[in-house]
Amino acid sequence: MNNTITFNGERTAMSDSGNTEWFEFTIVSDKKLHDDTVNELINAHGCGGQTSSFEYSMTDGQHLYNGKSKRYSD
Image (cartoon, rainbow, N blue to C red; front, side, top):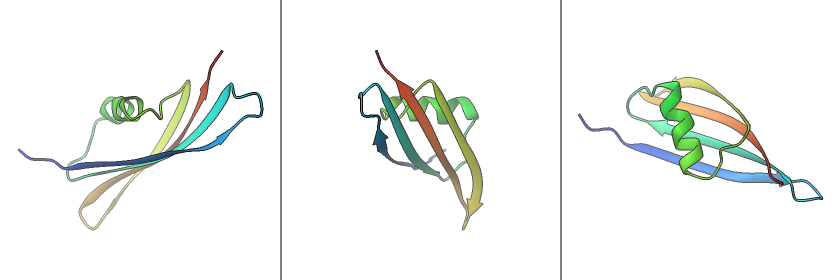
């Protein structure tokens, strides 16, 4: 079974102190992904954090995951 996954993510903001970052991301997949797999992809691409959420939709046969995350650092 083949599956193509595309990940697009970016840091959208950083606090003035530099210890909080906000990210937005989109994952596109030929096949539906388990929530744990989506979270692993978010972390693997540097957009993971203490909080993350995403919404699932399907468009033109593609599975879309659009979300946001927030990361705190010391």
